[in-house]
Image 1 (cartoon, rainbow, N blue to C red):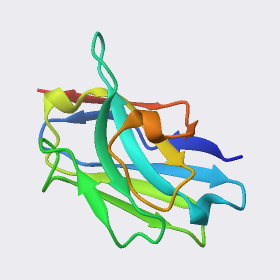
Image 2: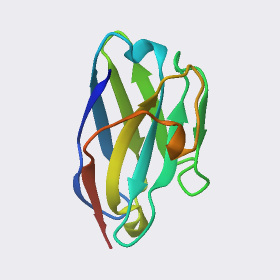
Image 3: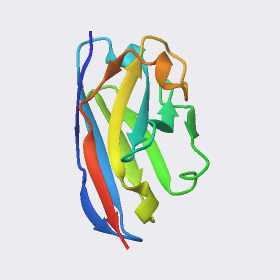
Length: 124
């Protein structure tokens, strides 16, 4: 069992930056792949970024590639998402998630545990 709590969301102007953090409880976090997803009003939840259990392999959605960076610290049980050059279309509730596998995945159905989400709003 893994409990996830996100933080770091807020309101930022277009072009600005935010860093989201996800604190994980449970000794199994280091043996899980993890990811970030987001859901905008009226839209389906979509993939943002994923990272394997050691942090050596990552993958990103095309529209955030080069702007967002996912990272993890297994010693601290944390998962981060650094978001730069934010755009109004990045506005959404952002969720961290982990899956009972060592391998990253861009599919939300592959994830077993989810945080409650944190709101990110980017003004134009």
